[in-house]
Image (tube, rainbow, N blue to C red):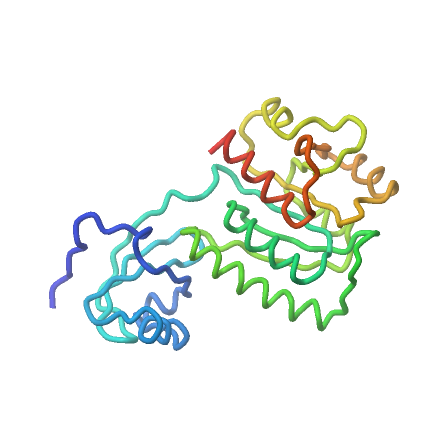
Length: 250
């Protein structure tokens, strides 16, 4: 059977999108969970098209042979990523707020998300609970990345220690906080060339302690950045910053 041509004008943005492993692309057999969604939720049949993503930038248009098999694959492209990688570090917040952080930041274009306990975090989780949340939030990140038409799958990590999480961040680091000398985020961005990486740091509901501010201010390539006149909820701050950055540099 010859290679099938892609219908003219068919775009990944117009198709159901799923992240899959390289093994799935090689075998051309959909995992059970995706096959169930294709068959019973989306009601797709042989000859319909979907988009498969490998999580590292690979984009493929796939025509279904039946409920589980792929008849043909065609490489494609998505231009939906920000022009540089942004990592978000969020202080531990209640799980429902953390889920909001994951959903909004993935939609906003963050390449990676980390969570760690700061001094004023209202929750502290043991290793078992952290592992459970990490699995759940990674799944949410995948769902949101598929919805947002992301070519890359953002990774979610949980740390036990705030300082360990902070020093692992790509530089420069913008701490979304109002300590002395903070510039508006837009002003801070306009003073620097287009970076290759950037990190955004968000504190808990009660803000950072004075000791945390002093320690972070002493770290290399770390700057305080203000989001403007209004005060945002902690779970909305990083998304608001991502939107400003996209407006300036995307």
